Amino acid sequence: MDLLVAGGGPAGLATALHAARAGLDVTVWEQHAGTVDKACGEGLMPGAVTALAALGVHPPGHDLRGIRYVAGPRRVDADFRAGPGRGVRRTALHGALRAVALAAGVRVEQRTVRRVEQDEDGVVVDGTRAGHLVAADGLHSPIRRALGLHRPRRAHRRHGLRRHYVLTPWSDRVEVHWARDAEVYVTPVAEDLVGIAVLTSGRGPYDDHLAAFPEVRERLAGARTAGPVRGAGPLRQDASARTAGRVLLVGDAAGYVDALTGEGIALALAQAPAAVRAVISGDLAAYEREWWRLTRRYRWLTHALLGATRVPPVRAALVPAAQRLPWLFSATVDALARPVGP
Image (cartoon, rainbow, N blue to C red; front, side, top):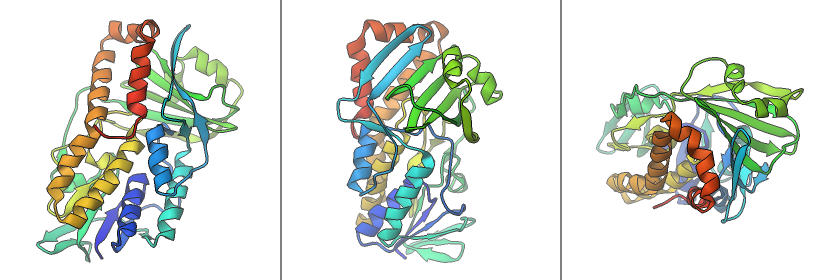
């Protein structure tokens, strides 16, 4: 086997699909059976929609015209200039990617990685030999930790919580509602389904966080919930490097700042072909350099916005400032919507 991919989420499946189309013998190990649901804002930026289409993946969902920031009576809109984004249920995205990967000859097995060993010729994962291993095993990647690449971080931990509601979307934009200690992301994902995600550094039940957003709660009044609340976090995860020997980290496993700017899937889709190119060339150091290049804009914008909004007066002034400077808000949204890169 040329490549073993640990993790059958979007990052792992995209990597395996690129590898199969490049002629590599590739297998994905995913510990969960079938389609996997995880806490996710579910809003795909236009760049992610384009990257999926290039792979022949067209998940069903709800087209998104842009972003709307809301704080009480104040609101400001910015449309995507590069075409629509798409609200897509995580399960729909996973199912669409999996179907295309299987059609391309990717093998997907229900297995969990427990032990990784390396030598000059490849990796041995629980007794199975492969030329290289891609760890796409998520935010809290056990492989990242086992390889000694995890860098612990304790300051300002943020978490995400998401639930779906059965109702007709009231907007064709992702709405970001701002409160003192949290944001709510409202994402249409179907003609009769809306995802409501909360990002916060506070702890407590989902409904307690939602209480800080009376406009959203009013919209949801009487709506039936679809599925449980799902959580993720702490969101900030750091890695000291993206490679170790013949192992490459892809997607959230490679490091993550925050879900604030909504670029997680787009970043994974850009990292996947870069990892495959490095495997084929035998130059894994090239992947490390490419990762820094691909994530530069995301890291800069997300760090800047996170740092600014930790200061209460700045956080309170964010939406009013976006109203006064709509060109700056539109330029920022446009930067996030473009294909991932420098």
